[in-house]
Length: 251
Image 1 (cartoon, rainbow, N blue to C red):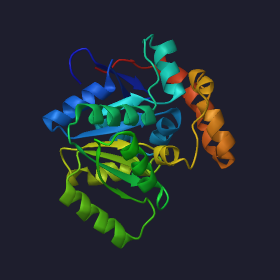
Image 2: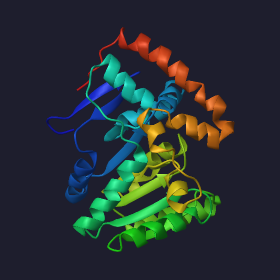
Image 3: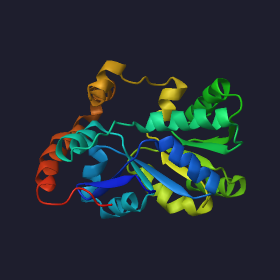
């Protein structure tokens, strides 16, 4: 983190607060600084509490952004930080737009989602921004042999921006394991973004997102997620306890 940016602890997990996340990533891109971006929400934070390997992967990431409402409300109400929620899908979209506008020629790769979805998402963005250089896509469903071929492809292509949509925590663990293949790349876990861009699913209406209720829309779309949503009240209780027993700012 450069001067003027800070990291705050949310249940021991760092969250970086800065004015311009896409701008910082473009600086990393131009400097060839390999970067792992984690989009943190309450559910991921609780998973990290139970999975120390995941927790360490997040702590090692160069950028952890406040994606979820729970994380943002913690930073606002308990640490008194003027921070806005920045969903990972919006970070990815702004980064793609900047790459197109600046005509950097940076090579982009989409990996994840069901067969064909990443390719449709790539076509969508290629139509929106013809100057984008999307050099490849790959489904998140494959055999071990196909994954080995994917690794070879990444090593050969050396894309500079790699979006990984495998869901939490699989995408974070996969990036940590494989980022050595493209050491100068920006790697971003984008969850279900490919589904949105391809038209397979839709995002919550803006008024839900603005009121920190996007999780409710996801539950409506995917009712099987209800067990995972139990992490939200658990996070709220633990966050209160943690805030009053530990320091908030870590850098």
